[in-house]
Image (cartoon, rainbow, N blue to C red; front, top):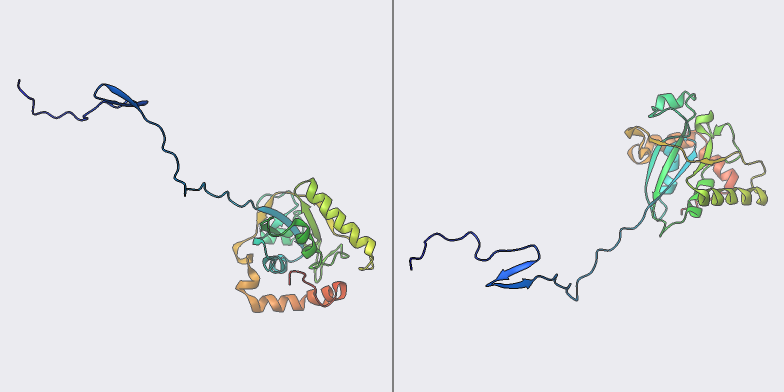
Length: 223
């Protein structure tokens, strides 16, 4: 019998359910994982918190130094104007305030801790602004994302009022979160990019002097 020199493209036909080998159907079963194999570890969930405490340059640093905080972002929130600029917010007509968004790992730092750090870096008694910066755009606020955050924020404010340590009525607002707009790039991490100017501004604005009056010499509980 003449044998054709033409070679078939496949020696055996293959089906989706198995292999046909010499007329015998062989089912393919997935191989079991080796004893040493492991499933990928789930990613650690992150959370966000938003606080307004006057100049956002000065609010990034205390949170950045807190273990469990992943990043901070300066921005604008609370108003109705979409994508506002620094100049627009500074005019005080947008309803926005300067704020900082804190991205953090809730497995390492709690929201309660973030609220504690917030209080000790603002003047809760000033309803006209913060330190040398006056105007609604510089007022202090806690922007809660859900009812649990609202409960924590209001409970912390109540404790401060009951302690009577501050000697006045707390003006800091606790309000529902609104769209957050990142500030211009030159505002981000300003204290790191321009350390001399940052220190000059902070000292000139009387921020540390007033914080010491309110909270004592050690104003930053992140340390």
